[in-house]
Image (tube, rainbow, N blue to C red):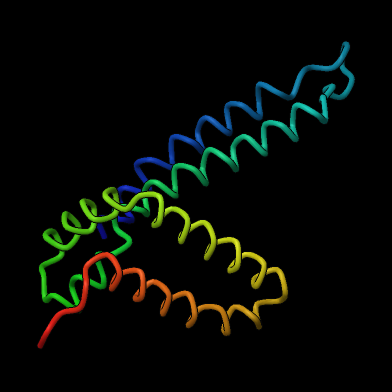
Length: 142
């Protein structure tokens, strides 16, 4: 729930800026003619928005990457797990970012291939996340 609220608070302003930016890019035509649009401006704007939203989403997700594992493995409460995940994620920021970027790219490629391969990639991604968790937090003895 916390992750969804944080995501909405950060990403909705990007969508508002994007809508305003699209209206700003579309110029007015001469007289009553159709608007004159520069295709390079639209492509640049769309790529910029995709990059900004992806960048924002990445840094929204990073602090919460280990929260589920901490709740299930260490029997922590949600708030405590989010705080511990935040500390551990930023202590190991490069490795966590590399993991997220790599699994996102692999998942996107699998999604492009008509979603069938995503069912093969998802279990591997979740397993790799547990391995990353084990490397960051160590094993618990029960």
